[in-house]
Length: 377
Figure (cartoon, rainbow, N blue to C red):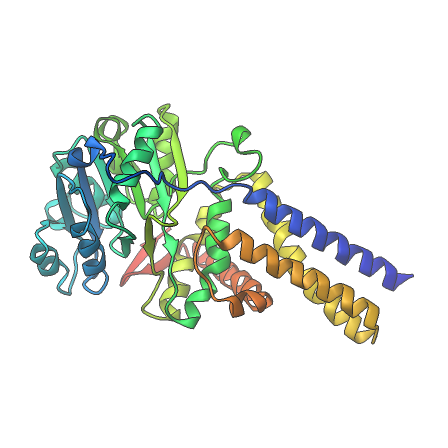
């Protein structure tokens, strides 16, 4: 009787977990894919702003991809945020205009400060903020991005989460974090029309210059560690729309290529803080999804303990369903190795431990490390 009850609970958690995983990422839109012959006049009016701190290794990929665009932007501005490497000289080598955050008011540093400085020096009617570790996929990527913004009425924010590219095995550990980042934006669920967006994706943000300055932009964001979420919230409060899409076939990045220590530092820096912006209903879906994944493993262990072939086959069937679900849901988010998905229990364990550590840093220590700086939360 007890065993039957435990099995029933596990099966219910697995079923509700799979259902929740589908509901929280019901539909993920991507950018327009139009013919390059249909040239958007907006490209010649856009200023590209790239905040960069010690990005000498990553910046060339982005600047090279910008040089390869069929239509060129009005200008490219790189803001050197206290780098101690060759970030500035590399940017100048590629013909970008280079600014330095030491011209800003005392004690204001970081990404928001760099973005605000770049925006005030920009001459374009539109502002495209790009993280230095991003890069465009194709020569018509900028064209497609601007056409997508036109489709949304050339107003508000169009934010793009880059497609996650993997080169080293440990980078697959970011799979669940990326999926939850998408889900946590509140806009990809089946109920997206009834839930306001949590904010904007940070790596790629396109907006109207007039609206940006009208809202106060990154100056109003200040030193908030989750600048992208705050900026999206500022635009929403002013009545401007915030659109979030996947960067698949448009713009990509590698997350934390410097090593697993950097990956852990990067996710602990912001994940617990960002979770506050997620709608409570989405949080429930995410929690059920995680509980279902752990339940699928518990079901296998229980069937082995009972030495029941029938239970083992059923439990393996549920395990395979979770694998299939993760493959489908991750296709618009990144290109992750199938082996990491097959071993998804390790991914869920890593996510849970990292999230708990993030809670410790942000709620108890009130301080995180990022790019050589100790940032107060």
